[in-house]
Amino acid sequence: MPNAAETGMSSIGKFAWVLVALLAILHYDFWNWEDRSLVFGFMPSGLLYQALISIGAAVAWALVVKFAWPTHIEEWADSAPADSPAADEQVGNK
Amino acid sequence: MISYLLQAPPKSTTPLIVVGIYLVLLLAFSIINSRRPRGSAGEFFVASRSIGPFLLLMSVFGTTMTAFALVGSTGKAFDNGIGIYGLMASASGIVHSLVFFLVGIKLWAIGKRYNYVTQIQFFRNRFDSNALGYLLFPVLVGLVIPYLLIGILGAGSVLLGVSGVPTWLTGAVICAVVLAYILTGGVRAAALANAVQTIVFMAVGLLAFVLISDSLGGVEAATQAVIDNAPQLLAREGEIGHLQFLSYCFVPLSVGMFPHLFQHWLTARSAKTFRMTVIAHPIFIMIVWVPCVLIGVWAAGAGVEAPGGNSNAVLAKMVLMQLKNPWVSGLLLAGILAAIMSSLDSQFVCLGTMFTHDIVVHALGEEKVSEVRRVALGRGFIVAIVALTYVLSLFPPPNIFDLAVWCFSGFASLFPLVVAAVYWKRATRAGAIASVVVAGIMWCVLFYDGLLAPALAGEHIQGDYLIWGMMPVAFMIAASTITLVVVSLVTKPLPAATVDRYFGIGQKVT
View (cartoon, rainbow over the protein chains, first blue to last red):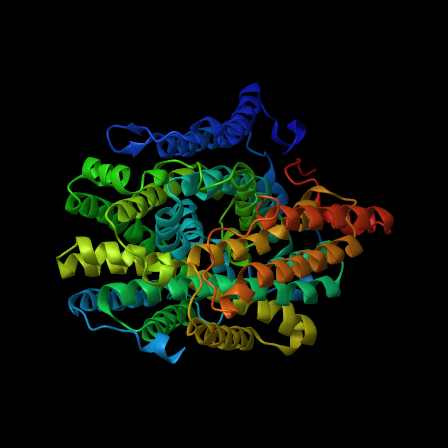
């Protein structure tokens, strides 16, 4: 994980990362192992639960992107040093 | 093998006409839209690093969702039930975006700063080792070939099932079409074609879901049939073990080492371009996988039988049995082929890129190989590998899902290398090489024992190959990680001048 100095991460950013970790833990839904019940009359509850994990992941990643984005990364990428190690193989970006 | 190749009962030609129209339109679109300066290697290999957020999302998602996601997931759900969504799809929604964020963005920045085109260039320079580059090349190409096979086999099984087209013919046509637009436009053509094909296969997948559920009497009736005939598929008990479920989470780490994905990352215009991909990827996976998993279990409930015990054909059988309108069947076929081709194209381009940059240019020197010559060599290597893969596709296929998981496991076992490369300064040249060697040996041994030997013996493989209840990928990653760490710690560190170039990403440039 990029450190706070690199990202200038706010407390919401840290919360977003905690949310990602929590989703990773909740993904292991051992309590649904034998559950064959249906939701909405057709959707197996175990499948719906995992689909909700996917939706939760999108929300968590949106928070990470918004509040824990690495700062200055474009600036670093654009400031190639003179002794670029791939300078002998330049093929693009001309 | 001959009897396998000749199994092709004649069926309606209408779906084929629809597929043919789609392929022609795709070719025309790709060729027209790829009219940028020709012969420029930067344009051919990394689209001049100018791809925006939407195209990056579509190309990355289209590349990662192949026959595995449509044909394979439907077949695996048919065999093992709804639990496969948790095994791969929801886990991938978390892990893929994690890798895009923590590894992909860093590699994009390093690639732009030092003008890299392939991941081997990066690893070779990061560890200051030609040997590592020459070692990684056959390993990565060797792992991409089964990935290509997944696509060609998936296309073949679907067209055979719906229209009776022999698999050898489908494979040849699909390879020819993808080659045509790739050889013309390079990675930009792949990205553009991916965007179109991703939209097509997502829309068509949802259409298939609605039409198939409707033909089964509605979603409730379709699921009721599963309760009556195959209730075990509605839960995981007896189908998937706890350790198996947990160890499957390592498989999606493979995206960190896919060479074709690395190349797509490099096409991004800026780091911010990744934002949409990181956020939308889990939702896109859900949109594709939930319908496929439901269709798979509904097929079991409806009493569909997998020919020869191989569930690759389940999706095709559902399309054929449930959809009486051949035009609609044709549209669905086109959508399935769109998903498959949107992966093949990126893989084709990346193979040519690696051969050109990591072998030819590196061995001969840049001054001896002009840009036009590089593009030509890349194209030649692509054609050679596609021909080899095509020949391999003519043999009776294994289960697509299983083959894909083996392929992804191989890439995942190399993931510790890329993590160490961008996060661990102490990683050494010897550690990196030893890690790749151990990962390669373990994959070969376990793949032979778990899939190749049974397949060659004509045995039907039931379920995943497990070690102490866990997926082999867990042991491969553990072994390559331990090797990397231990060997690095006992060998001489790389000079700070070499290593420091790759750290400090995200810190303010002074």
